[in-house]
Image (tube, rainbow, N blue to C red; front, top):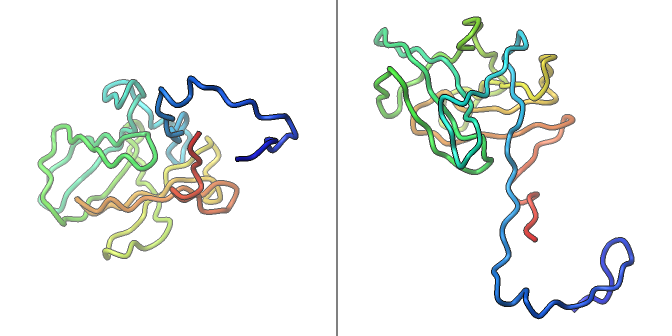
Length: 157
């Protein structure tokens, strides 16, 4: 057992800590933008009391609608609004407000493309979230200050 924390403060054990399980820290997206600076967070779809990420989608069959993604990193829940999704199909994703196509950040291992959703109103690929455009592929990544953020980097209490 450690005696001092990272700041050099003495750690005093709390007997109550054994009664309550430690909660995991979670990373929640609080701001997300299209290339033109429109917010992609919307209260139309809520995930664990957080507004969802709302993007417009078109399929190859002519269908069009909205897809809401969870803003909680690692949570793969999605909700389709006004669009029937077929497993494995590729979608064209765009901003629901200005209809600007979301730019491709990189290729996904599944054969789809990771489209960029920006963490700041200034469209910067060094601060973005990449989401795969293939239905049922849950690959996503966060690029912050040019560095990839992975699930392993999120600590627990």
